[in-house]
Length: 291
Ligand SMILES: [Zn+2]
Image 1 (tube, rainbow, N blue to C red):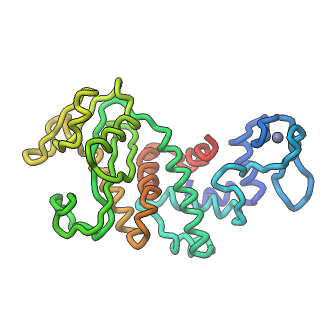
Image 2: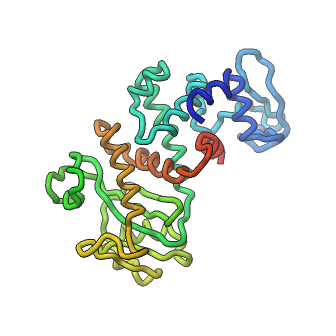
């Protein structure tokens, strides 16, 4: 849904709460503190959406434990912010979002980081399988010259303080990528072990020696980039495509932010890639907030 559709569908704070309650509780509301179903709506007028638990005698609302917890920003603005971010091919800067939704820039930034944390949480649950392309890249520092692959390695031309990112993608499926402390064999091995179902995966990489430690653990094949980039099905074009999306988002919108936040921007790119075929990414995101 685009921002207009979202605002029309959820015209009030109560409509937003009703939607979130239907996702979280369905027909059986429960207390997030003690999981009891012995709960009832609280009738205190201005605190919309509040419930009482008759088991633990605490109160709660549907936002407890979610990215919306404790927010003073109207939920319609949250919904609109999510719609704007999901529809942005690259990304949206916080000053831009602040202008769009009449927020302060720090508030827009805070909301975006929470939205990205939800995206990261979803990615953390993924285990990949099938034909997998794994690769690394460097991001941050000065933008590299377009089409200059030699500039993509540490110590390469014009490289200053780039941050290593490692990723793996299923052919026709999902991607997992994360910021890495380094791109040595042990780091890559740990990433692959955590990300892949090793018994159900076939790995394609370039000839980097960092993958040597993995080769005996699952079927794999390498491609020699100095000779050719595509050898039938043996290529890493899928993950290269993801790196392209990541770099366009980073250099297009966020280059002036600290690289300390980069894991969240990587998560945003991955989330959008993973939901690229979804007919309703907004609904997918909302459901993900409660999973
Ligand atoms: Zn309770």
